Amino acid sequence: MTTSGDTERFYLTVSGSPHPLSANSRLLASLAHLTEHALVSAGNIADLPVFQPDRDRSPWPATVTEWRDKWRQASSVILCTPAYLHTIPAVLKNALEWLTSSGEAAGKPVLLLTFTPAPPRGERAMRTLQWTLQALDARIVATMPLYQNEVGFTDGGDIADSAEREVLTEALNLLG
Image 1: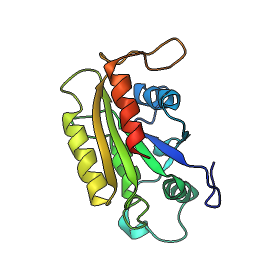
Image 2 (image 1 turned 30 degrees about the horizontal axis):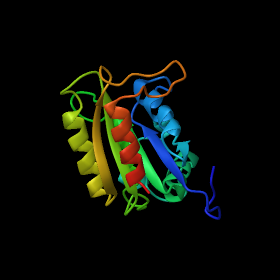
Image 3 (image 1 turned 120 degrees about the horizontal axis):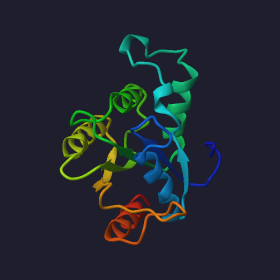
Image 4 (image 1 turned 180 degrees about the horizontal axis):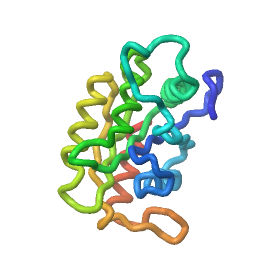
């Protein structure tokens, strides 16, 4: 983990699915082969307590402090989410709500990805994700709906050569 005194830049990856073997987590892990920057996982966002504004005060739970610290230290953030009931999973919305008062997302370059089985799934989830990050004053550099029926993986876990791989590489370059 990079500390605030380190000069190494890293991208924080946030999976909207709490399952470590989810398609979204797999896609995020595969991005390591497309960028020179280190990728640091946010971990399981399901470990965060339910956000309640009246409980957003010191002393914060350790999971909240760690979540906020990772956002603060990251040079950029990549969020990848499935769509549940046409929106983002509650666990992701909850995690983002913990950034409301503390401001770690403000001005932070973010890449937003939805990774769903097939079009048009994920369109409404992407809109919800955009609105949420805009409310947090994040700097959205790109949005990409990706579909599991169009993105293939090699046996080694890389994204197979495709138009999606090229566009993802370009999007990562926009993060700086």
